[in-house]
Length: 108
Image 1 (cartoon, helix red, strand yellow):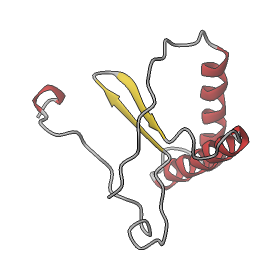
Image 2: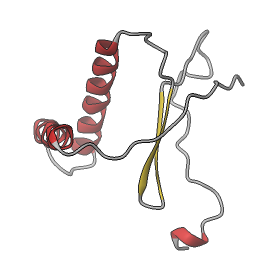
Image 3: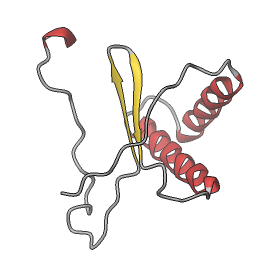
Image 4: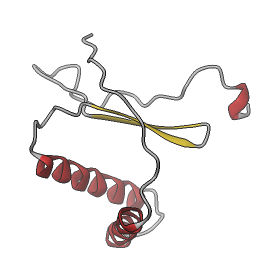
């Protein structure tokens, strides 16, 4: 089935422990939709503590590097180096056109 014929978006399963947690808050959702990055953020999750977002992104990077190694693509160190290179290239590049709006949260 081609992407055009796909009727439902492909979502990831909730991580282990989320449903059993006393408190769980989704922080970020990222999709590629028709070739473009679409992001939903819980932008006020850390108030003005942007350093906490930096730590979160670094931890996500470590998870990605571990996954790349487990899949046999490259070592964790090579994956981390590639992630840093990609981050720096995007950070230094011309800012992409971003748009968005603040929305509320959903409680399930």
